[in-house]
Structure formats: C-alpha cells, structure tokens
Image (cartoon, rainbow, N blue to C red; front, side):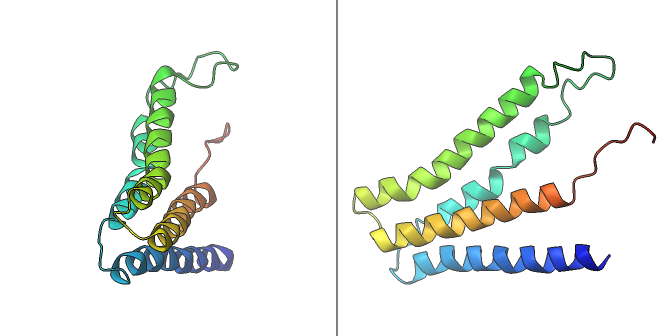
Amino acid sequence: MAAGLRTVILLSFVLAVGFLLIILSCALWQNWLPLLVALTFVLAPLPNAVFAHCGSDEFGSSYDSSSPAVDFGRFLTAIIVVTGFALPIILAHSDVINSKAAIMSIAGGGLVYGTILAYSAAFSQEESDYD
C-alpha cells in the first residue's frame, strides 16, 4: 500500500513538472502554440486504450498474441507521439516559436507521456490463469 502511494505521489510530481515546463514554454515567450504538445501527449495513449481489447481471443494460438486492431492502435499512438515531438521542432524551425520554447515543450511533453506510460505500467492488472 505504501509503495503504491509513493508511486502515485512521484508520478504526480513528475506530471506537474511536465505541465509546468509546457506552460512556461508558452508563457515566457507569449506564444501559446506549444500548448498543443500537451494536448497531443495527453491524447497519445487513447488509441492503445481503445484498441487494447479488440480481437482478444481466449482460444487463439499463443504465438499470435496481437491482432490487427491492437497493431492499428499502436500505430496511431506512435503517430501521435511522433507528432508531439516533431511539432515544436517544426514550429521552431519556421520561427513561429522560440527554440528554447521548443526545447522546454519537448522536455515537458516527454515527461507527461512518460508519466502516463509509467502509471499504466505500474498499475496494470495482469490477468492470472487462476482467477
């Protein structure tokens, strides 16, 4: 119980630092376009969550553990994650935002997405054969 509480507190602190970096990248240079990075990284795990249980077959073969729907969800997640990292770089390259704002936005977005992944990995409930 105490380890779970410590994990939640640590993850919430890292998530707050990530959002702080994203908001500071917007506020310091008076340009709110890097805030789109927060939106992309918050929406990134959504396709995995939607397609995670599609095509799960109890009687399927053990070597074929993924279905096309699960692979498509992973593909959409990868597209959104790459967009989250590439968007600030493209905006900085075209001089729409400052390059320091892009770096802060990428760092904050990485922390936000890493926190979401760490939370889902730490608190995932694996199915047991004995349940």
